[in-house]
Length: 150
Image (tube, rainbow, N blue to C red; front, side, top):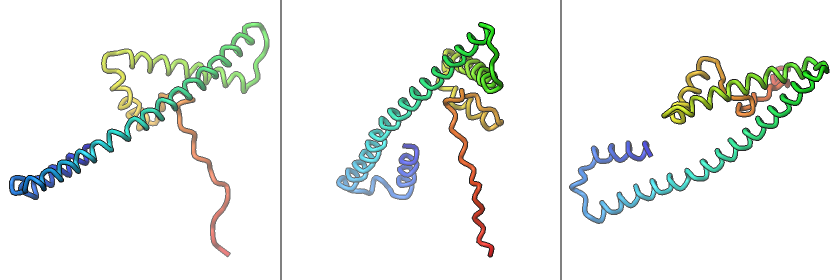
């Protein structure tokens, strides 16, 4: 939408809008409305997909938290946990802590709007505040040497 408005402003500066005929004006306005309408129509699909992704990630985080609680209950009963299980419980504790802090930010007035820039600033500083289920997986590392030297 911003690009449409910038293009429109540039067009108005280049062409004297008053010198156009009524028919030319209608065609220009119709094209802008059509572009704006197409932009608006594309947004619900992205919003729907983002909502589905959020709910899927939330469900994954919920399952991991339940598993972490079950491991803590096992440990409280006196059983020893393996190193992997201990590491999993520690990671889940971190995820729950971060999730609680983010929920607190969202609960503040304007927090939902401020959350995206806040996450962006921390990510630029090398800190990812999202729980593990909401992080993008690291790209696979290629172990194949693709040099053409003979």
